[in-house]
Amino acid sequence: MIKYTQKKWESFTDSKKRNILTASFLKLEQALQHMQATLQSYEEFCSLLELLESEGSALLPEFKRLAERLDFKGLKQEIADKRKIYQQYRENFNDEIVGQKDFHFLPVISQQDSEKDAPKLPVILILDNLRSAFNVGSIFRTAECLNIEEVWCCGYTPTPNSHNVQNTAMGTEKYVAHRHFGETKEAIVSAQEKGFTVYALETVVDCPTIYEADLSGNIAFVLGNEALGIDPKNIVLCDGCLQLPISGWKNSLNVAVACAVACFEAQRQIVESTSCC
Image (cartoon, rainbow, N blue to C red; front, side, top):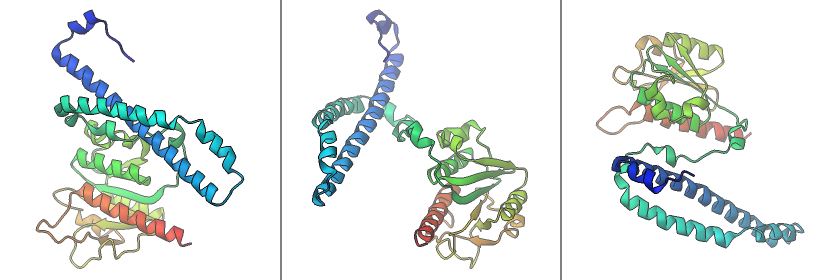
């Protein structure tokens, strides 16, 4: 916690004071997130106690004693008090907060949780000469959220070394395995050699949609340039083409959005196939 003397505080410009107060707000907001998570954990614990009670479990007295030691009422009051302060801050610093990046909205993962060896979603994303670092950063963010196996940047696609990629990925690029290929065809062949079925995600006449394809195995999606799409020379190397059903006037989605839709459908099919076994 940083404290300033009156003399030091008065030496700051109004702009610096506002920046300090805005940073204080963000800390408060993050603290509220943690407290709310604690409250939710307590309520979850209480619901489990109710299940123990309904079955007359011998474990009930032991865990009830543990629950009584938690200052549940005190926690609720503390959250309520801090929310009042939060609302006052929010009204006074609305413009500054809206202009901030959304780092402070992202839930904080504990070091213990981040070290868990969660199984990777067997999906590789092959980026065929994307021009926008912001789209690439968004793709990395989706890849991290779904714990996707790898992202392969091909040609002049910006890599995570790019400041603008990092700016949009918001730190998620550190947790996603990635490689760079000089040419997309090398990445396609490499994915096929690894046993992945490679699909070009492209608007092609009469090709099936992602909802009609079997995506329950090892899948690689090739995503094309924002203006030119996937190079036709690379499309013919793929095992097939898939498209997203579009019914509006604009016949395509932003590449990062299309990637997210395809990846979530692959995740759905993979989860269903594994749960059925």
